[in-house]
Amino acid sequence: MDHAELTQIFTQDFLDTLLPAQKSDQFFEALYGDASEGAYDIQLELISVTTSRIVLAFNLTQRPGKCLVCSLTYGIPNVFTRHPLINIKGMVEKIEEKGIKVKCWRLGDTEENSSELHVIPFFLDMEST
Image (cartoon, rainbow, N blue to C red; front, top):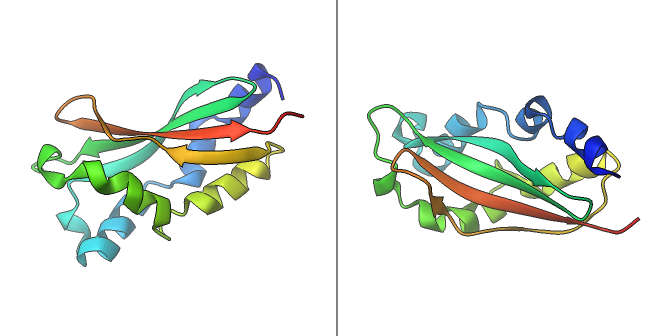
């Protein structure tokens, strides 16, 4: 698949089907027993596309009145990798349904872009066709 085709697939609408907005509350409900305890909202964003790699990002955006810096986001990549509500494996399956063959994927380390936004890179390496 070429760059233009990949870019057409990875629209914000498609990314929002992979990780709907309500997953943030569901994640914190499962983690803490109360969605209001969550310090951030989680949204997927397309960072870059090449014919061999897609880079997405889990944007962790601070909720009003909460402290993102205090919420220990550095351990979150390990949690996201395994958490059934985030379901990265399911995301990869939905991506592959679009005709994209994912060879492997991994989450990078949490990047603190600002006190209101932390980002976790999501790398998808594609098989050569």
